[in-house]
Image 1 (cartoon, rainbow, N blue to C red):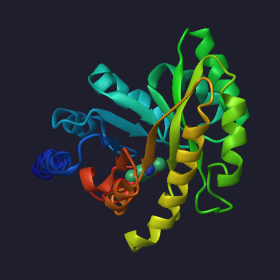
Image 2 (image 1 turned 90 degrees about the horizontal axis):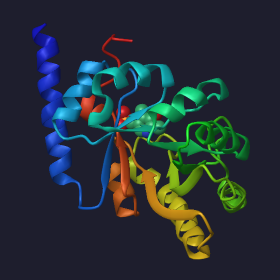
Image 3 (image 1 turned 135 degrees about the vertical axis):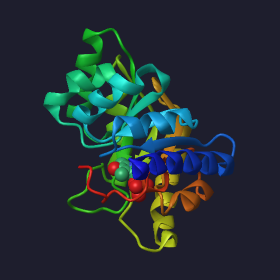
Image 4 (image 1 turned 90 degrees about the vertical axis):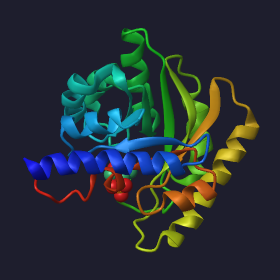
Length: 230
Ligand SMILES: *Cc1c(COP(=O)(O)O)cnc(C)c1O
C-alpha cells in the first residue's frame, strides 16, 4: 500500500516536472498502456490533459474513471472490430495508416454524427513489422482520406525505430517533419496540418527540437512498465 501511494506521488512529481519544462505550444500525451485507472487519474490531477491509449479495452476501463476530465488519443494499432467502440471514446486517432482503416472510422463516425480528428502514422524507419505508411506514400493516402466527411486529417505521427541513443532518432523526426511541411504547403481541402506527434520518454527533447508539438510520454510519467501489474 505504501509503495502504491509512493508511486502515485511519483506520478504527480513527474508530470509537474515535465509540464514545467515543455515549451509553450507542445502538448503532452501521457502514454498509459498497462497503467491502472488510479494512476491515470493521478496524472490527470497533476495536470495531464491528454491520455494516450494503445488498447480499446483498457481505454474503456480508464474512461470510466477519468472520463471527461481529459482528452483521449488512440496511439496503438486499431483493429477493425474495435473501431465502433473506439470512435465513441477517443478524441483523436493518431495511428491511421491505410485508407481501409480511414474508411471504417469514417463509417462508424457518420453513424454517431462525429467528425474524428486523425493523424497519419508514418513508418519513418521503414521497418517491415512496424505500423505506419511509408514516407513516399503519405501524400497519396492523405489525398484519398481527405474525401471522407467524418474524419479530418490534422497531422502526422511517427514512432521511429527504437534507439538507445536519442540522437539516433533525429533523422526519422526530420524526415517526418519534412513530409508534414510538404503536405501543409499543398493546402488540401479538408486537411488541416496542425499536429506533429513525435517523441517518447527517451527521445522527446530531440523530437521537440525537430518540430514535434505533441509528445507521447509513458515511463517518464508512470515509471518503468515492468513492475508486474499487467
Ligand atoms: C508506449 C508508447 C509511448 C511511450 O513510451 P515511453 O517510452 O514509455 O515513453 C509513446 N507512443 C506510443 C505509440 C507508445 O505505444
